[in-house]
Length: 178
Image (cartoon, rainbow, N blue to C red; front, side):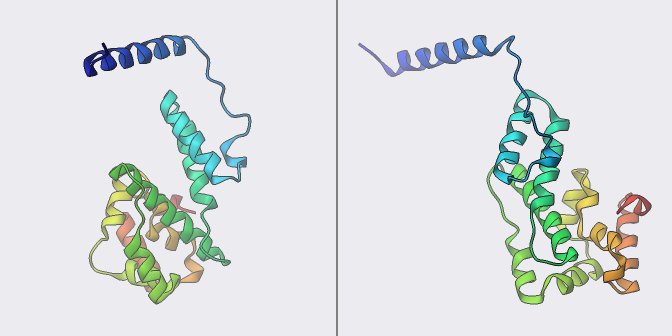
């Protein structure tokens, strides 16, 4: 007679056997470098598998490629903004352990437009939580302020100075951003 307890023991034995089979096996890495992949779903799978086997450097390369492919519009500013938002949404998803979208960010962009939303975020007196989160996670180069520093020709001098000041105040070298 099978009981719930017997089922738990059987499941543990199956998992132990599966783990024993995996030990000593070489897991093949994808043939294509993440920087060359165009399919974001494949890249997400590559990222998950690379983290699973402990290759964080490869997973980070795949993650950054997903961000590069996240496009919002046709202009270069829109495309770079898409990368920044993809980075932030990835951060939120990893932190919350479930898919999380930056809904208030998208709402502001819908109401004001990409450029005006960026200007308002950068020139606000208070640091946004997204900025703080990305800097603390080591993704300071994927903040709105870094985007402004990378594309100073798109913004007025006061906006660029506000971005430089906020980044410098957080310990990010503004000379290395591009």
